[in-house]
Length: 401
Ligand SMILES: *[C@@H]1O[C@H](CO)[C@@H](O)[C@H](O)[C@H]1NC(C)=O
Ligand SMILES: *[C@@H]1O[C@H](CO)[C@@H](O)[C@H](O)[C@H]1NC(C)=O
Ligand SMILES: *[C@@H]1O[C@H](CO)[C@@H](O)[C@H](O)[C@H]1NC(C)=O
Ligand SMILES: *[C@@H]1O[C@H](CO)[C@@H](O)[C@H](O)[C@H]1NC(C)=O
Ligand SMILES: *[C@@H]1O[C@H](CO)[C@@H](O)[C@H](O)[C@H]1NC(C)=O
Ligand SMILES: *[C@@H]1O[C@H](CO)[C@@H](O)[C@H](O)[C@H]1NC(C)=O
Ligand SMILES: *[C@@H]1O[C@H](CO)[C@@H](O)[C@H](O)[C@H]1NC(C)=O
Ligand SMILES: *[C@@H]1O[C@H](CO)[C@@H](O)[C@H](O)[C@H]1NC(C)=O
Ligand SMILES: *[C@@H]1O[C@H](CO)[C@@H](O)[C@H](O)[C@H]1NC(C)=O
Ligand SMILES: *[C@@H]1O[C@H](CO)[C@@H](O)[C@H](O)[C@H]1NC(C)=O
Ligand SMILES: *[C@@H]1O[C@H](CO)[C@@H](O)[C@H](O)[C@H]1NC(C)=O
Ligand SMILES: *[C@@H]1O[C@H](CO)[C@@H](O)[C@H](O)[C@H]1NC(C)=O
Image (cartoon, rainbow, N blue to C red):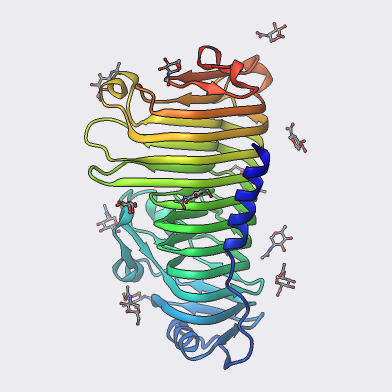
């Protein structure tokens, strides 16, 4: 059991991250002009093999940046790339993405690209957090969108105050994020909402490792068609957890999440720890969630430390009448410890599946989660699922061995 798992993990680790420093070629430096530095930055990246933004430089970006279709590029970001807070400009000019009605400040794609250098990407999010508080349909730009990229790496970068999602990996292959610090902090009473750390969509072989995330929505989220993904060695604070889904949202669309490993995660002050969620109800889509492994989670003050919800957005009656068409199979949760917040009283883990055997081969091992003292002893909830593993007995009638 363990050895094939390790081989699979190593296989995935070696198959990603081929983006390598491109030595030689033309090197350029971009410095601040006092006006909009967007066009000069885009031009430099198109012309030069290696582009440096020096340490003391803050580039002010007032126009959208299209850096797709690149080949063999290094962006050495030692300084800062800061997007302006001109909301009307960005709402009308952000790159539109149909999926979940998103817009983007900056799209980067192509082959063999490395962004690193210890610098910062700043989304000037405060105006957006404040405006969203009174306009829930406000379009807000994604900070960094990796679009149609192969062998792409982002390493050693700080990202602050994105208006909405921080990172969107859309149609990527072999994409690595390593050593990323993310922080979305509102200075007003309006929260930094929907500031997901990463959203992965229609992408294969993506690794997110060695990173710190302090935000107000999913730490990492696997959207439809995410395969061979790693999210490991992460410290997440204030988030909605590491999430597979939501899946099966759109009628007629088939969603796949296959081969996902998430290990060594510290999760604090969060809505969820490890989560899988799929829509049920009339008129939903379909799909498969397969070969998912969540292990070595240490949690503190988390509402739902371990949760599968295959009846998302339905009550039990409706879920029974219209079960989810997203099947869930081969899921392992192991080595979980820490405490819940008490938001769900004594319940520390919940596995809620649709009827008719739509969750299969779910194992739980070495689960040591506790609610806060005032909520008594930990309890475990399950429905429509058979569970194996040394902690299966905690789930009462759902235990099969
Ligand atoms: C971005 O630039 C590429 C190459 O110049 C072009 O083909 C593509 O249409 C542009 N994308 C958008 C969304 O404008
Ligand atoms: C914001 O962008 C619009 C164009 O969309 C421009 O006319 C306006 O001058 C900009 N405002 C500022 C403060 O730069
Ligand atoms: C990150 O970047 C900083 C500043 O350039 C550098 O000093 C540091 O060594 C880099 N760290 C890694 C892990 O590459
Ligand atoms: C909310 O923001 C959107 C732009 O994203 C705009 O079209 C809409 O008019 C705004 N709604 C209100 C009530 O201001
Ligand atoms: C991220 O934060 C860690 C811990 O504070 C620090 O060691 C690391 O240098 C930071 N990375 C960047 C890119 O600033
Ligand atoms: C962690 O998240 C909590 C709740 O959102 C917040 O109050 C706290 O400041 C965050 N801690 C850090 C170190 O950012
Ligand atoms: C996911 O991939 C499958 C198989 O290639 C495809 O049929 C389906 O349309 C894709 N779904 C999405 C959301 O792209
Ligand atoms: C998932 O991993 C297995 C085992 O390594 C592999 O055979 C399969 O092709 C992978 N699935 C996808 C969609 O890449
Ligand atoms: C369950 O949801 C359905 C559809 O929204 C609603 O009609 C029904 O009253 C709900 N039942 C309960 C018990 O809440
Ligand atoms: C969880 O386990 C880790 C590693 O074994 C340990 O360092 C940590 O203190 C534990 N946390 C709790 C809250 O028990
Ligand atoms: C659980 O296992 C029993 C015995 O094999 C089977 O009859 C039942 O349908 C299974 N339930 C689910 C929800 O898979
Ligand atoms: C918690 O479990 C312990 C040991 O099984 C038991 O003695 C105690 O009464 C339980 N406490 C509550 C509040 O159920």
